[in-house]
Image (cartoon, rainbow, N blue to C red):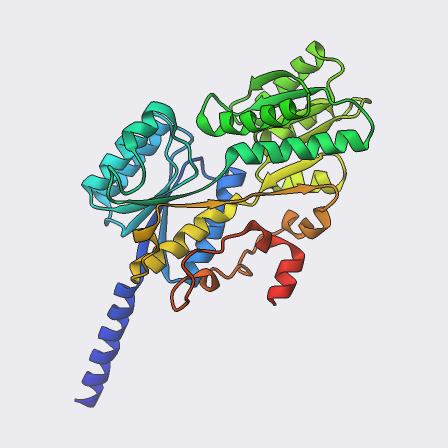
Length: 357
């Protein structure tokens, strides 16, 4: 009889623990293996393991129609998750949000990708779509200015007049806000932008566009790009040229950081691959009764710039495969008197990590 009692206790204890874990679906907007979003996903997996979250992943494959179809299929045929974390594609936000509302799933969006009339249609979090808890994003405009400043500052240090071209991602809010920051910085410093071209976030296309830009502007020496993949494409196009080029991008990809350390690329803006892990922390807090998402609808984070001057603070990120050193539980607001999250990409500098330990 005692043995039966123990078995029953263990059985119910196990099941209670299972109920306590929350389930989250991450809608990876890209293809499996793409460098930046793979890093976002891996860091989310670390955050999930630390906070007892059952994390599932589907892929949008870089296409709003595919993403919506995959999300529909998941919600129709799989167990409905407690929460969803996703990035809204321009032109597909309303459909995704209506779908999630219909299934009664609460969700957080990453990055501010929706503007103009479509933004008016979806409103603000918790306004039209009540299950939209909030959004976690960075200021792409300011980030674009940060990258411009890093490139122009280096040009002045090397005593040459900046001749600037820009390689943008696509005709969309994220790209356009970044390039708007570039234009603002150039205008403030009485500098001109020779031309902006679009390379659809593609390394190969950026390489091809750079080759054409060199023919059109033989004196160009500063190449501002909206992503590290496109920066790598631009570098591939100019690496055998004798004239100096300063190239920068976004995302802190390992290959880019290595080239910055080798003084072949100039700068990369990033740190935002932490945002998915942070999103899980807020969802665990919300699930356990914290009021942050009841009182707030957004978390805006600042990005950081890695350059040839500060790469030694970040060079361990070049070869990193294990992100378990990140402690997402310590960022929780549960059992604290804090009302705001302290999410900061500076947590990744060597000095910060050493002080934390």
